[in-house]
Image (cartoon, rainbow, N blue to C red; front, side, top):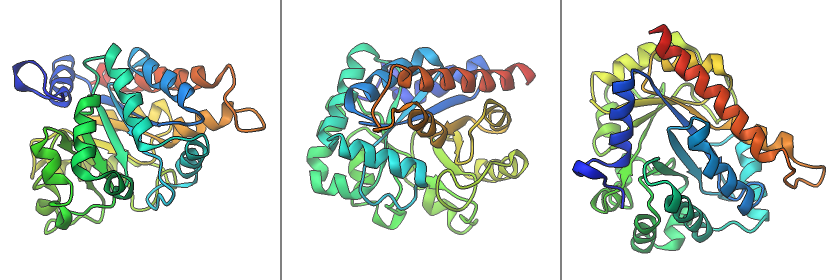
Length: 283
């Protein structure tokens, strides 16, 4: 389901198109089921037209140790609203009925996938039109658990590289990575720091010596200006916490969606996309 014409995956096709346009990707994160399934589905459906090039669809989990407070709370809202991995996959499948080109990458932790059953999960992900996986708590030493079966099923396995990934470790991290490399701009949890474009530029240059894959940078990108800065030095800017903050800021006192919830996220997407586009025009 992830392959496109010419044998290229949607992720490969999207980055190829962006290269011809001379710009980086805006990778937008949405927590499935936050604040409820219907609202998050509306947000996801609206992201491409608002300027998102790739969608990261968060899989809610009770113990998200790599995530900061904003994404943790978003996951808890989603779980409280009844989200499950099956419902997340169904939401992706519904999105795919109307959009056959925008890459969708599931992001989260291994526990829900393990509980679902790896073969069943991969089959369901293929059917739903998922293009790749980012599973933050599976190191390369555990590739046989999910990474290699996912690759065999035609799904990209996107690996995280961090400031602490040294020259000795980097080849192992990149060995079975596909789709793109996700560079984490600082050590720590999501939403806890801010991004420094100069530091990121040198890190991206170092990683480029080891791989031909596109490199997208996440953690700490909140504003159009930061997205522009990262888009000048990397192949993609990944934004997560700013989106979950936009959702939270739109909710009523009971934590429920309001008439402004979808618009708050899509307006932010348009602003961030404009920042990414500004980098291309400056280049």
